[in-house]
Each structure stands twice: as structure tokens, then as C-alpha cells.
Length: 449
Image 1 (cartoon, rainbow, N blue to C red):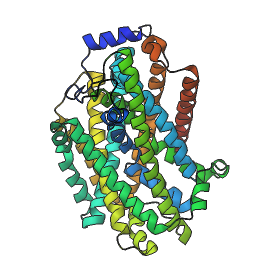
Image 2 (image 1 turned 45 degrees about the vertical axis):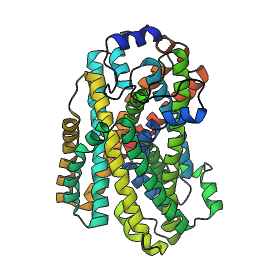
Image 3 (image 1 turned 60 degrees about the horizontal axis):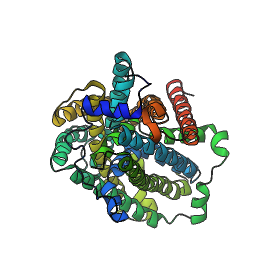
Image 4 (image 1 turned 120 degrees about the vertical axis):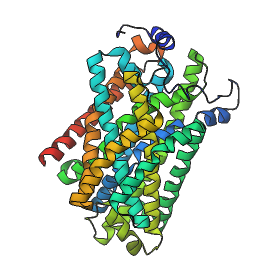
């Protein structure tokens, strides 16, 4: 398969030769026929965006948001807004790729690049998924300790039990899986809504935080945290995930049907990512109004935040709500990361493993370093491991973003569905920003910049 293929030829080849992405759920969710009420069509497409949004508020995001809010108040809210706008664009491009070509991003890479390149991309992506799972193990283990007093090692081992969670949910149907994820997202949103209400942040200062400040660039420490926020926000495996799960809808595989599906899938992901914006902003706002305003600018770890929230807010349930939201975040991230792992393995290698086997392998690889580091270095070691997992994720990001933008801007692959030159220019600028900031974050982390 070469870059000279037309979009129609690429789709025909996908239908004839390649297995469908997530074949067990592909095109299993019915869509109302054209002419139906717009609300029914929107509801039919709602779901994939929320699965994707989970990656934008996983435990890896919490540390950067907490550090930014406690140290610099509301200033970095503008960075959260910027990174969310970047995410909205990239996820819309991922959905477009899947709907137009009947391929997920991994399958598109396999059809375009040589076998050695694809194998390297798969290895890099697997490392990112394991790193993401590492953050989820740590986050879930911390939540279990905060809520039930379970030691971190015990909590990490307990997370192995969720190996069968995705299998159970998928057996009940993809809509059930989406409902589970959305329910936990609602729990997280409610928990932080209560905390924001209790914190009562000054509205004017909060709104000013969404306006970019030159201090973000001129203050090295603030710039470092800002880069961390962006690096922790845009998750590489989400691009593979979204390009696949949009194909669960049984839209008409015609130009008209695809155009309509792109519209509703983009609407779905945009709405869902606005919820992610609220939750990430809420974490930072709670940290700013609770810790920064009281002079506790050193709060950067989840355990510290838990211990201080209730006393500083004067709300006994605040810390419990914080831990419940963290547990819900860890469980949600578990489901989506496992699904992404299945997609990249099948897409790059055409290799299928039972869901339970795939989950146990990935989770096992993530649990081992958590147990070892916790036994040797204690809680501080797991906090550093959480940061390390975000560095691994940042290393993989360019290898997902660049092929995605390249594919959707190529008329030889996308035909009339290729993005316009202006959108392509914005997408390449976003890709360049993300790559540059992540390279800097990686360099600073490794060499102490």
C-alpha cells in the first residue's frame, strides 16, 4: 500500500482484505435514518467522545493540575484551556480518519509504512499504554489507601482484579460500556462541583486565569509545570482509540453517511472534552483556592491534597469526595487503556488475544514496578514513578500525532474528506507545539533542566 492510493481505493482495500477495527462491536449500534430528529441522531453518536475524554483526566493529570494550582494560583487555567482546544482538534481528526477510511490509526499506519517501521511504532505505542496503565495502578492504589487504609502494595495488587472489568462490560454490549464510563465521569464531576462550591473561589480571579499571561513563558518554573499540563493532557493512545470506536456506529457507509457521521462524532467528542476541561480546571481551581490562598504552595502530591482538603475547606467530606473521584478516574482509565491496547495490537500486528489475557499481561507489567518501587522507596517513590510514566507518554506522542495529521491532510488517502489547507496548517502548528513542548519536558526531566 502506497501513499498514492485514493481514498476510495483505500476503503475498498480495507473492506476486502483487512479485518475491521474491533470487529466484535464494529457497526453494532444503530443510527436513526436520515430525516429523523437531530436529537435522536446526536444521542446515537454520543459515547465514544466520553471514552476518549477519560484519558484527559486520568491520575497522571491530577499531579500537574494540583502542582499548578497550589504554586501559581489560577494563572495556569489558560494552559488547561489551550491544551483542551488542541485535544478537541486532534480527536476530531482521529474520528474523521476512522469514519472516512474504515480504518483505525494503527491500521492506517500498517497500510502505509514498512513492516520495520510499523513494528517500531507498535513497540513505542505499547510502551505508552503500559506507562498509562502504570499511572492508573498508582492512582487507584492511592485512592484505595486514602479511602480504606489499604497499603499501596496491597492496593496495586488489588488492581489486578479489574483485568476482567472490560471483558464483563464488552460482553454486555458497547453501549453498556459507554454508560459505565459516563456514570463514573458524572461521579467525578459531582465530586469536584461540590468542592468548588465549598472552596468558593473568587470569580474575577478565576476568569482572569483563563487569559494567557506572559509570566507563563518568562517564569521557568511556571513554564515547566505548563509543559507538564500539556504533556499530560493529550494522550497518544486516545488517537488510536477514537479512530476505532467511532466505527461502532452503523452509519451508512456512503459519502453522505460518512459526512453526517463526522459531524455528529465531532460534536460528541467536543462536548465530552468540554467536560474534561471542567474537571481539569476544577482540580486546579480547588488547589488554587484551597492551598495557594492559604500559603501552602508546596502541595504537589495526591496524598498531600487529600490530607489538607477537609481541614482547609472546613468540609469534612471534601477529602473523601477527592478520593472517590480519584478512584473513579482510575477505574475509567483502566477500561479505555485496555481497549486502546487491543486496538493497537490488532491494528499493527493483526494479532488477537483474548481480552482477559491482554488485560492481565498489560496490568501485570504495570503492577510489578509499582510494587518494587513502593517496597524500596515508599510513597515518594510512587509519586516519582507517576511523573516518569508521563515522560514515557510524552515520548510516544509525536509518533501518533504526526501520522494522524499526515493522513487526514492527504487527498490521495482521504479524497474529498481531506481537511482544508487552513485546518491542516493549524493541525501542523498544534503538532509542532506539542512535539516541541514534550521534547523540552523530556529533556528537563532527564537532565534536570
